[in-house]
Image (cartoon, rainbow over all chains, first blue to last red; front, side):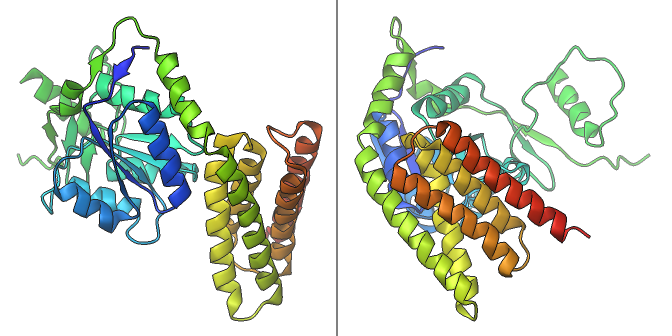
Length: 175
Length: 166
C-alpha cells in the first residue's frame, strides 16, 4: 500500500452525533488532513458544499434532519451549485444489506462500516485515489459506476437484466 | 426498428482529488495510520463517560417502555438512537462486545412491528447485558463471559422468532 499525503485536500464530515464527529475529525487530522469542515446534518452540509471548496465528503447515513440519503441525492442531482462528481464515503453502523444497497443506488463512492478505524478510513481514501470510477447516468440513477470490475475480454452470453448498460459501456469504450 | 433500450450516458471522472494528493516515497503507511489511531485513542476517556451516560439513558428509556402508554413510542425511538450511536462508537475504543450487543438490539427493534411484553423482555436482556459490561468494564470480546452474553441474547431472539412465526 502506498503512503499518501493528504495535506492539500479539504474534507467535509457530516455526522449528527457530536462525539462520532470528533472521532472522524481526529482520524482525519491524524492522517494529516489539514482542513476538515464539520456539519451536523444534511442541511448544514449543503451550505458548506455550496462554497465548492470540498474535495471529499465523509457522511453518516442516519441523521435526524436531512439524512444521508437525502444529502447524497442532492449532491448527485447537481443542483444548488454543488459538484455532482464529488467523492462520498458513507459511514454507517447499520450494515444490513438493504442499507448498503440503498447507499450504493443513491450514488455513494465508498461505504465504511462503524465502528471506524484509521486503517479503514485510509483504505477508502486510497481507493478513491487509485480506482476512480466513471459516472453513469440512466433515467433512475446518477453516480459512480456500480460495477467495480469489468472484464472487457468476456465474450460470452449476457444474461443479466441490466446488461443493456454493459452493452452500452462497450459501445462507449469502442467509440 | 425503434431502439427501446434505456438511455445510458457515461461521464468520465476527472478525479481532481488525485491531483491534490501525492505519494510519499519511502514512508510506510502504517506510520501514518498508527498516528491517526493514536489521535483517536486520546478520546478513550471521554468515551468511557459517554458509555456510562448512554447506559443510564437506555435504562431510562427501558423504564418508560415498561410503563407503556403514550410515551412508549418516543421511548423506543430514543432507545434505538442511543443504541445506534453506541454500536457505532464502542468498537473503536476496545469495546466490540458493546457494539455487538447494540447491533443486536438495533436490528431487533428494526424488525419488530409491535412493542408488547415479549419485545420488551428481549430488549431488557440487551439492556441488562450492557449494564453488566459497563459495570465490569469488559473490554475486547469479553472472553467466555462475552460468549455467554451473546449466546444468551441469540437464544432469546431465536425463542422469540419461533414464538412469533406463523
